[in-house]
Image (tube, rainbow, N blue to C red; front, side):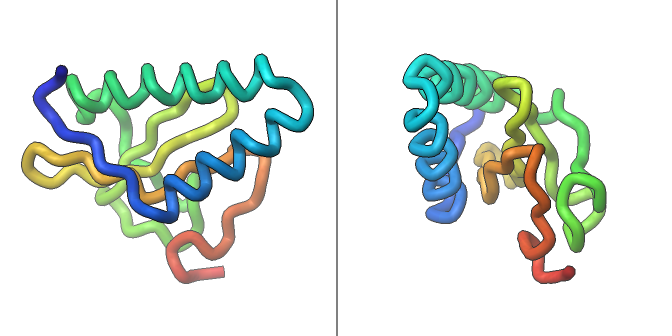
Length: 107
């Protein structure tokens, strides 16, 4: 167990489920790989969330600068998260192949 506690928001939990369900319709192995890589990402976040860079407008339009960090996993997904004290709050899990105009309230 790492030093930090990782907490998923309802939105990020829903996003992960949606991505996994979509992949499972095409390939169960791809869905399993997504979940496995996400679990590895969570373990890395528990150990040291500061190893990941800050997210920017390219990652999500309207994102507050130097606030959210991004963790890439499974080649095409990223988790956007905040670090507060010893807690890591994952607020979004994004498929990098899709546009994400409204994640942070701006278009």
